[in-house]
Image (cartoon, rainbow, N blue to C red):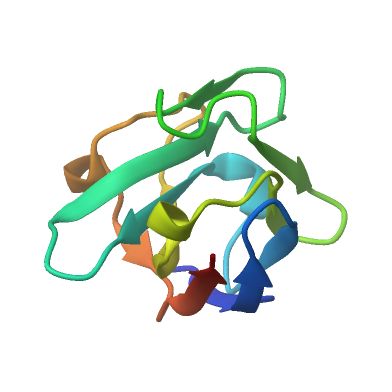
Length: 124
């Protein structure tokens, strides 16, 4: 069983950058594909980005493609989400999630472990 803790959220400005981190413990990190999801105010949770077990394959939601970058460091048991060119509509609680598989997935139902979330607020 893996425990996930996100950090790095906070207040950002439109056009600026933030970097989220998600530290994993309690499992073999490289056995999990990882994902980032977000829940915007009044909306359902949505997929943001995902990465396979070794970081060789990534996939992004169209809304963040070209602005956000997901990466992982298996030696540090950490996955990152670099968010550039922030927009006010990126305001959300961001969650990292772990999937017991080497393959990534865009579906939240395929992830068995979730962090508590970190708030990102982007001002215009």
